[in-house]
Amino acid sequence: MALRFFGKDPQTDGDECPTVWVDEDTADMLFQGWKADAATEAECLTVGHIPDTEAVIRIPARMVPLVRKACDAAERAEQSAKLR
Image 1 (tube, rainbow, N blue to C red):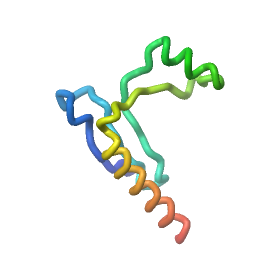
Image 2 (tube, rainbow, N blue to C red; image 1 turned 60 degrees about the vertical axis):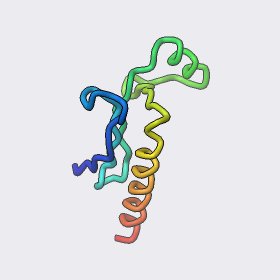
Image 3 (cartoon, one colour; image 1 turned 135 degrees about the horizontal axis):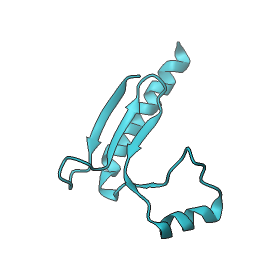
């Protein structure tokens, strides 16, 4: 697995903070974020079950530029994989 790091939340202490990566082998995006509180999770459950293998996380809006870069890289990696 080759993870490409895109960045951490610029307004945190640099440790234990939301982070964005792209798996260069699969083009999947990976997020580390704050666990959703019970009220947020309950709201999410109104549209469907959350399996034990999944989680609702919160990424701050100030990280949108990092997420956009990661989305672009994931899209390029996926297109590249299709050409192989």
